Amino acid sequence: MREKIKEQFKQRFGTDGVIYASAGRINLIGEHTDYNGGFVFPGAIDKYIMAEININGTDKVRVYSMDMDAYCEFGLNEEDAPQEQWARYIFGVCRETIKRGGVVKGFDTVFAGNVPLGAGLSSSAALESCFAFALNDLFNDNKIDKFELAKIGQSTEHNYCGVNCGIMDQFASVFGKKDCLMRLDCRSLEHEYFPFHPEGYKLVLLNSKVKHELVDSPYNKRRESCERVAATLGVETLRDATYTMLADVRDKISDEDYRRARFVIGEKQRVLDVCDALERGDYETVGRCMFETHDGLSRDYEVSCEELDYLNDVARECGVTGSRIMGGGFGGCTINLVKEDRYDNFIATAKEKFNAKYGHEPEVINVIISDGAHKVED
Ligand code: GLA
Image 1 (cartoon, rainbow, N blue to C red):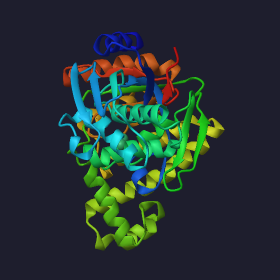
Image 2 (cartoon, helix red, strand yellow):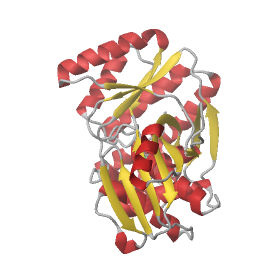
Image 3 (tube, rainbow, N blue to C red):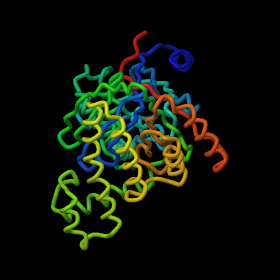
């Protein structure tokens, strides 16, 4: 990918630039908890967005997306926002950097990636983090701190892309560290690295290829439900809610909001349980929590779909240790923790059964937990 980007950059702009990359993410557990002030447990993966960038001495940004074979040019003022959705991610990162007092001047860039799009692996956070990191390095002597870089990406989603997301994806993409998952407390922003070497197990994603698209999806509605319940309870976020408190307001909220909040309260605890279990090497508990999360996301939070529920059923039938829908939902992947000796049978069965039912095989994505945003040295 790097060589192709370099070749394209040279051809288009006649010079060389500096290369940066940032990663997509997985999340072992802790879904829809980030915007509720809860815990998440993600890691960056070996799937990247990579960009070559060179300061061009003008007040214009000139961008070429190799994967889309599309070119766009924009200025750096608010009124210069491009129409193209893909370019708005980069424009948003520039604007959010400037809004925070950072410097951004014109640059040329070519970028490409291998984070599968619409699979729930946060290709958009990888793109944002790559540029936030690069602009910090190129124009700001790396003075903007890493949490601020993650927030630049998050605000880009809010203000330029229409997704009212939490901080998890951008956090994972910026802070990711090889072989480590990270537990983030989304209220205090305290985080801790957990070395992740599940001896005798494999972590594999199965992409249903049902396109997950958070813009215009009910994602924002889920968040509104949680905020409504928090307001009824008189707490800032559902982080401070308990099952007892929820039961007390049951007749004041809709059944739907009740179920959304019930999931979030359970999920908050599951992240802590999984972290404890991992420290004991107790993968059975990790797996049980993953299945519980799936059930909650499917029945209470209602962000699953038929295909993902089917993949989850097949995982249970094949004796997979833990399996669940991963990320925002509405399509994308399941994440599966499976014993090595059951792996081959699971993959073969999932492919065969899914194909028989839906007419195509799920895509098998093996991931390696890797570093997040970085400069790519020659
Ligand atoms: C998407 C959002 C995240 C998070 C997850 C669900 O990936 O971008 O902030 O809310 O969904 O856990």
